[in-house]
Length: 224
Image 1 (cartoon, one colour):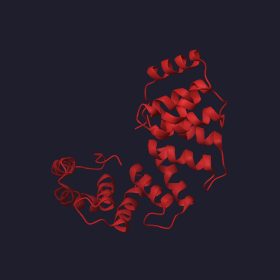
Image 2 (tube, rainbow, N blue to C red):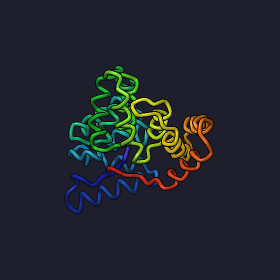
Image 3 (cartoon, rainbow, N blue to C red):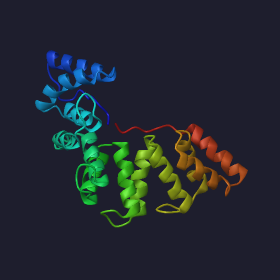
Image 4 (cartoon, rainbow, N blue to C red):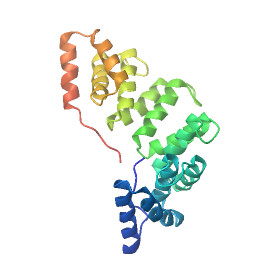
């Protein structure tokens, strides 16, 4: 969750309270952070509603209470807050605090993904790849993996690389596969490390060198 976006906070006093809440959270003083965040959340600030939900979900400054976390996530998600929409998608996908419901997960992931949240884009791609609550569609999976991978999401980079390695939704291309797997591996993602090495065994030294060069030249394209 990306905490503490200033959108929706008005007035010097409120802004000061907001900044104090952020500072308290960042230094690990969760009790103070919660005390400062809650009034802002109750006044309808979506960022603070998401933050309060996260504190309940993680037991930070308050007893762990997932139903209460979901209540706050929903308040924020209904205002269009992408992080809260993702959190609701996660809950529905995993069945944590609510009955597992892939259709509900798909709805919230999509709303969040369309706002540019990389983790939601990655998970939406996975649902298309697996055919969960949608018809299996590798091309659509690749589309969402790519948007997340372009932003630097390691799991999406790994999954996109695998799609290129297997020729699912895209023409098979070991060089491109290696690029994405290598970028993911550089972030320490073990699955990507293993798959990159498997792909490399199927490539010529020249192809590996080309892929490594492309990976070095890669730069993220952030949407948020």
